Amino acid sequence: MNEKKTILSGIKPSGDLTLGSYIGALKNWVELSDQYDCYYMMADMHAITVRQNPAELRRRTLAQLAQYIACGLDPQKNTIFIQSHVPAHAELSWVLACYTMFGELSRMTQFKDKSAKNADNINAGLFTYPVLMAADILIYQADLVPVGEDQKQHVELTRDIAQRFNGVYGDVFKMPEPFIPKTGARIMSLQEPQNKMSKSEQDSGGCVCIMDKPEDIMRAFKRAVTDCETCVRFDPAAKPGVSNLMQIYSVCTGRSFDAIESEFAGRGYGDFKLAVGEAVVETMRPIREEAERLLKDKAYLESVYADGAKRASYVAGRTVSKVYKKVGFVPKSAL
Image (cartoon, helix red, strand yellow):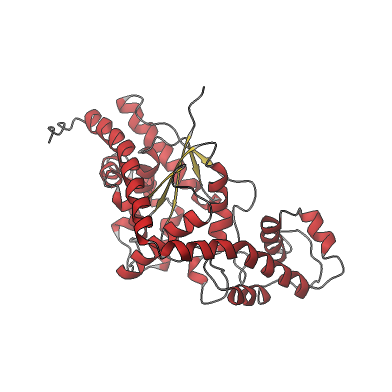
C-alpha cells in the first residue's frame, strides 16, 4: 500500500477570511483530506511583515481556526496548527536563508508589489518571507502545495532552494509541486473584477467575508460590477464581472456555465446578481453559524491548536534535526 502524499498550505490571519478564501482554498482543502496527509496552518508569522494590531491578530487567528473547522476541516484527519506554535519553522528558515540568493529574492513579484503598497515599512521580513514559506513547505516534506497562480513563483523558489541544498548534502528534501485546483482557484473582486478578491477591500464592497451577515452579502452582490450588455455569458476577457459571478454561482450551486447561461437567458443582471447573492448566503450560513458556535468554546479550540502544534512539531523537529546534522551543528544533549 502506497503512503499518502503530504500537502501543506496556510492562510495569513491578516484580515477576515473571504468568499475567495473559501472557494479558492478551504473548499478544496476539505476535498483533499481523505486522499492526502494534510497540514494546514494559520500563518501568523507571515502576517507580521505588515504591522498588525496585536489584539486583532490574536482574534483573527482564532476566528480563522474556527472557520477552518466550520468549513469542514476535521482536526482528526488534518493537522491544523498555528505557525508560531512550531518554532522549527523559524529555525529551518534561517538555515535555508543561507542557501537562498539575494537576486532570487529581489525578483519575487510579491515583494515588488508589497513594497509599493508599504513604502514606509519595507522591512527585511517582507524581503525574506519566501524563505520562511520554503521552510513551511520543506519542513513537512510536502509533495504538493495548494496555491493560486500568484503563488506559483514561491513554490518554484522553494524547489530551487531544496535542489541547491540537496546538491550539497544529498537527498534531504522532497521536491514539492504546486497544486492548482481546476475550478474557483481565483475569485475576483466584485468591484474591480480584473483584480483578485482581497481582504483589504472590505470597506469598498469588493469582497464578501465568510462571517458577513446575509444582508451585507446581498448588498455587495447587488452592487457588483457587470457590463453594459444584459447577457449572462461566460467570457472572462470580454465580460470579467459577469464571468466572475458565474464562477461563484457555479461553485455554490454545482451548475455548469451552460446551465447558468440557459437559466438566465432573456433575464436581466438584476435577477442574476440576486440569485448569486442568495446562493452565497445559503452556502455561507451553516459555516458562519458553526464558526460562531466554535468561537464560544475556547477550551475546544485550544485543544485543537495544542494537539495540532504537537503533531506538527514532531514531524518538523525530525526535519530540522536532520538539516542541523547535515550542516554541521553539534547535536543537543538529551535534557
